Length: 476
Ligand SMILES: Cc1ncc(COP(=O)(O)O)c(C=O)c1O
Image (cartoon, helix red, strand yellow):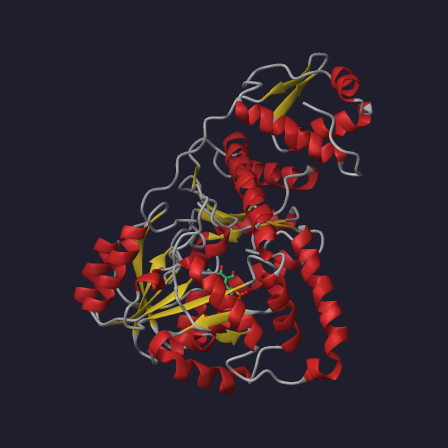
């Protein structure tokens, strides 16, 4: 290790270097690390810098400390297995998911609660701070113009940036094919309204994001839950059988790093999906909100990349990549463009102007770098979560290995009731999202979804240990 450059965050740089050396095998599991004094002398830094660096590595569970002996590289824990493919009954039903979703959203926003229950991103990245500065800067520059409408389809420079970025997802889109919305939720609802009407059946992954289920319920649609694999996504075989058997009007899917499983559908399956939908003449509302946050070196394509006849309505937002409160989302609705633009106008007139301007500026400069930081951090935090679950939860617990995003899906021992667990955890200052939220028929009683976007520090580590204890107490 060479001495890190001078800066307030010296210890962070030192910790990163030590972690990199461990990853490269310079130090192996079980090896003793250099002592604090030895490193401080060798690098010409203070002992407290080295101690802080080791503190960070302890928090990240890269090293462990043994009293009187020093720091040692941790041996990786035996990780819990992932849950199997889901097996919901494949029959359309009215969505019965209750009001607990609203309670979970509110509970997670309470100060003092460690919010494993929400799907909000980490707010402690430099990129996120930069966007808030841009908002203030643009408000000053734009003055009264910032208070004017940006009528649908929305602020052109933002749509131009989005069209450029769509190329990374394999989609050749012009700015005129994109409609800016107030978040992905609005995009999903507008697109669903464009393709289906009350009484129609919509196929969804199971488990699926509860906002989709609530939209289906509010629009008077019926949900058809399809078995879904935690690594490869929706079962195309089950979907094909369902399309043969039921009058499916549309599908709503999240093929990239879906919430809550974190599955990324492989390219061949995406291509097959489009063929299948074309054969049955069914449109797809594609939720790509986590597409930019997958961990693989190159971004996965959207299903829309294979769409030759405009039947895919692509929806996304910056809620997971930057910040949900900006309320900047969009839809590229293919052949339903005119309808979605009109629905946007009658639903909310327009999306707030200044956030569109600030996000456009950030996408043009800074976003790519921010994404690299966020993806790296989330991947590392996922690995730590898996180890923590192995350490604190009963051995029968299973957990997904999300390929992107920042939520994991845990299958707890059978007798666990995740709604009761949610209440008990909240009393202890920790929120979780109970499994029944993610099913139209309130299945997944013994499942929970956990958010791992925040850094693992004393507070979050203690909260996870508390949660593990509550689950263990309920397992005996
Ligand atoms: C899969 C998925 N789609 C859509 C949304 C809603 O996004 P937005 O906040 O942009 O409306 C969420 C947020 O939790 C989500 O997880």
